[in-house]
Every structure is written in structure tokens, then in C-alpha cells.
Length: 435
Length: 169
Image (cartoon, rainbow over all chains, first blue to last red; front, side):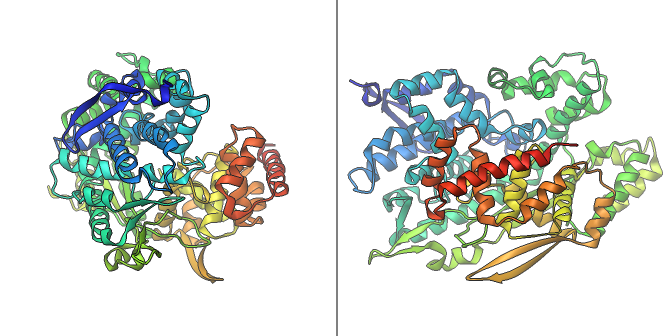
């Protein structure tokens, strides 16, 4: 039997808190799960620094990847199978792309990518197409198979229906992370009727549509997503941890470039500092490695690096105030920066504006950017209508971006009056920080 | 601080005015691909490379009062035009933005229409592929735009012209 169609003698199942079981019957999927590149995802947390706010959020990108695979498996095997719009020859491609879609994520992705100017999606492509265990397995399916999997994940594959299963406004990726993140953070948002959504999903040439009868389940899903973004993903305490993490990496990079001699040599970081990261270097980097260095750097002689690492490791985070970008607020920020310098506190590391923004749902507007594949409803008469034209709830939030800005600072340092007492008092007044 | 914001304001200031969000997105993407230091992350969307980060940054700059956004009605849709304000000029004057060769590229790109820039940015997005494969990609992924082989040739020529302009003197 060809490798692509080879089945395991017995179906393998993994217990999963969200989907109860993850079912694996295809040999290719089983082999991919066993690769070192996929296993590395165990050491990357799905929600980065969120565990410092919601202590349960320790789940990994591996468990999310398995979850996305399971949802796509159910869609293609239970819902789409036998329908004329679905091409069964794209089944394995869909499953592999679902399983591998997050393969290139680095440790604490957001900050890591920002500081070192990296893109996890490019690393996902490199892992799939480069000299890796994953690539070897995909090549056994077919010469072009790794390329096709990479293209589905990059959204440049010709079959748009397959792409939309993993990347659209109602895709398996979101369906899994909303439920999984809700479960592990312990919040009551993020729940929606996925069983119902899957049951009413139908394949079309370029995307899946939802039967009209499932509209309320879609509304619920969109509202869940909205709530999760503002209650969990953009939580100000998590963002504070993210700000400190970013500044640690900036400081370490700056020190390296300035010729500073680290007491604990950061071997794993050298190629990142130099901007010459190979795939092998990248794959060695995970959150365990990064946290090891942060603990070591708590003993460094550089006061800023040491302080930031102590803060991150021991959760001594920055406090924040609302910051509405405007000319007057920018002037206040400049004034604060000057005062911070006078107080001997480097504002580049200790006074940070952080922004979050989300667009809960959007539809196609001809001639402009922000074109997202809208969610389509299939009416009883066969007509297809864009969701916000049918749902008043969705219409109310369509195209409405919500943005939030905060200014982060170290309250403990500003309250310490052993030095620069008067300047710190002035700063506290400007920040409306109590004594 | 705000270096990435300053880079965007500088680009819009140099261009004078940029009409359309799509055009602005493509101009910044192309400039980034020409190695100008823009750090916004781009992903492939239906109109080609698109950056959520850039959208957010532009919104912030409008809120800060550094950019002016005007909504104009076009045939069947609205288009947004961006220009720098006096406060934006003041902000820019205290920032260090060093991209001397960017001006000529920006002025040139701003004279092109959004449809052509969409094609140019898509060609650049697939710059690791052979021209034949890129052409196939464009015909498949952008079938609704109905680009011709001549337009694709033109896009390749245009990229070479821009690369020459982007070289520092």
C-alpha cells in the first residue's frame, strides 16, 4: 500500500480535555507527531506569558496543534465526505496542514519575533521544506507534497477551501484555541457550540458555508472570540509580562552589541544577536532554554538586565495607566521620559507604551484593504448571504476595530524614596500613582 | 521610541499624500522588500501581502493627530487618503529617520495605481520562486484581477527600476 493511504493497524487515541479524544488512523499523521520538530512544540506554551496572569495557562502549542488536526479530521471525514464540492484527494493535505500549521513558533513568540525581527511563519515553511524529519515524512507521500502543505499554511495554495479550513474567520485554528484557552485559563468565556457548527458546515468551491439554521451558533462563536481577546489575550497583566520580556531581550542584545561580558555566556542567543539564525539554531530555542538564561541573568552585573530578569522570573511586573495617544498625551510622555532620566531610571526600559487591537469580524469591501474572507450563510433556498447581512448582532460589531493603549512603569522603583525623592514624587503625580 | 511610527510618518510625508489603504499597504511592503527598515509583519491576504500591524500603526498615528485620514467616496466604495499634519511634522522633526534613497522610490510608487502595486507586491512575495511559477501563482491566486503576462513582465521590470533607485548614492 502507498504510504499516503497507509492506516495504522489500530486507531490511536490521545485523551484531550477539549475534544475528549484525538483520533489518529493515518500512518503519516502518526509519524509526523513523532518527529522532533513537532515534539519541540511541547516546550512552547500556547499562550506565552499568559500563565503569569491565569496560572492554568500552561498548555502547549503541541496540544493546540493536535486539537486543530482533530477538528479538521472531523470536518473532512464526518461532514464533507461524500459531498460533491469536496475533493477527497485533499484530505491528507488538510490534515497535515492542520497538524503542522504552528510548527515554526518560537519561545514566547510575540516578543521573540519582534526583538530579533523574525517571522514564525517563515520558519514553519523552512521546517516543512528544509532538511528535517517532518520534510522526510512529507516527501514519502509525494514529491510536491511538502510544498503543498507549506502553501496551505501560507495561504497561497490553489485550493481555497482547504486553506479556509485552517485560516479564515471561522476556521479550525480559532475553534480549537478559543475552547482550549478558555479551558486552561479557567474563564467562562470562549465556549460555543462547536458540535452544532460542524454539523451545519458545508463545502463550497472556495470556502465552507454555514447553513442558515446554524446562524446563532456562529453568533455565539464570534462573541466568544470577542470576549476572549479582551478578557484573556489582551489582559493588561499579561501585557506587562510581555513588555518586561521584550525589554530583557532588547537589553541582552544591546549588551552583546556593546561588548559586555556576560557572566553566563548566552550561547543559544549568539546567532539571534548577530541576525544570522539558522534553522538548527532556531529549533534549539524553546521556552525552557530561555527561562534558564533569565534565571542565570538574575546574577548578572548589569543592573537593568538583572532587574528585568528578577521581575519576569518572580512576577514582579510593571503597573500601568491608560494611555490615549494624542498630542497632549505624547507631550506628557516626553515630560515623563525626561523626569525618568533625571531620576536615573532608563525610560527606554522602564516607561513603555503597549497597544492591543482587534477586529472581531469583518466582511469584504471592494476596492479597499482589510479584505477578510467573510462568513457565508447558506439559506434554505440555496442563496448565499454574508453573515452580517443576516445577523443584527454580528452587524453591530462588523468592521469595528477596538484598540487599547497602556503605559507601563515600575511602581516599586517610583515609590522608593531612598534616592531622587522629589523627582519621583513629580513622576508619581504625572502618573496619578498614589504614594 | 516610536521609531516604527516615525518611519511610517516619514513615508507618508515624503509621498505627500497616499490615496487608499491598499496602496499604502503595498507601498510599505514593497519598500520593506527593497530593504528599507520597516518592521511591520506581512502575511498573504486576498489582495496580496497585508499587515495588521501597519493598519494598527496608521490608526494610532491618526489618533495621535500626526496623520490626517480623509474618507472619499469612489464608484461603489469608500477610499481613505492619508497625509501628514503639522503636529506630525513637529514629531518627525525630533525623530531620526535615515532613509535617503526612500524618497525617489516612494514618489515613483505613489504614481502607480493600487492594482499594479498589488501585482508588484505579489511578485515580490514570491521572490524565491522562478518567474514561471510566480506567473502561475498570479493566474491562480489572483484570477479575478485578470492580470496579463505583459503586466507581469512590466512588474518585473518595475522592480528592477526600484532596486536601482533604492541603492544609496
